[in-house]
Length: 148
Image 1 (cartoon, one colour):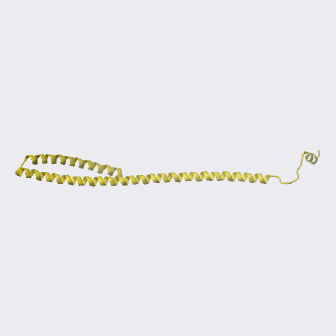
Image 2 (cartoon, helix red, strand yellow):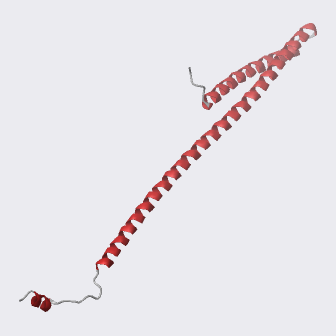
């Protein structure tokens, strides 16, 4: 099963049909000019026949112009949907990047907290290993105690 057409595919198809309709309108314009020229040169029943043909051509032209207007609006609407979809994708990408950045900031913050805790622990160890007000000995005391 083939995947459904993308928005860009749809826009391309509608624009292609619009170009085809433009060519038809242009062809009908050329035919109308010929009819107008023939109407000026003819009279009587021949003029009425050419006038009827010109009216049919004009009716077709107006129908194609209406189709062209509808296709132009359809293409515009599809392009708007495509733009909105792209904007939402861009917004999601930005939000994901911001979440990743926030996560990295949290990791860096956590690492900073661990370093601070290690520094605090070292300070506590130093404080606990200090000697407070106990008797102080010098070298003479050491020699006397060891019998020397």
